[in-house]
Length: 176
Image (cartoon, rainbow, N blue to C red; front, side, top):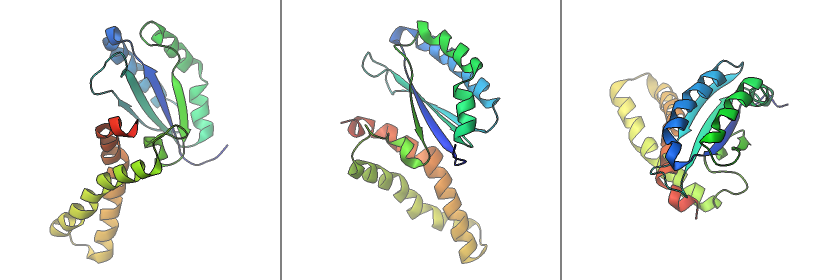
């Protein structure tokens, strides 16, 4: 198994009539996941407006390595929690695994590269354009220091906020 950080996206199709049940269950599985060695992060994304055709909730979970993620995925604790979802979800959850930013777009069934490029541009351009001057106004640790700080903030913001947000905004276009 690789020692590279790995991300899994778990897609749950939730019955429209049972949204509250899923929302009550989700923090419990997140808490259980956090107890496992190598856990890094979990985020949950809901569809904007839940309909019969747009009812997919996505858990994005990161672990330090594939081996540690596999321990979580195959754990009895997770299996027991998944059994609870049978009454309020449709079908089995779908899992995908990634080792880079490609997890925001999907893998084999993801959008064309040009769409990913456009969405990435709209996510990163405001950060690159506005953040460095703002940092230079507030702090001065030299050109290299300020560039380093700006780059760290841009990368973290891209990974955790800007790209997930832009993927939600452009979801309708990315899926077509």
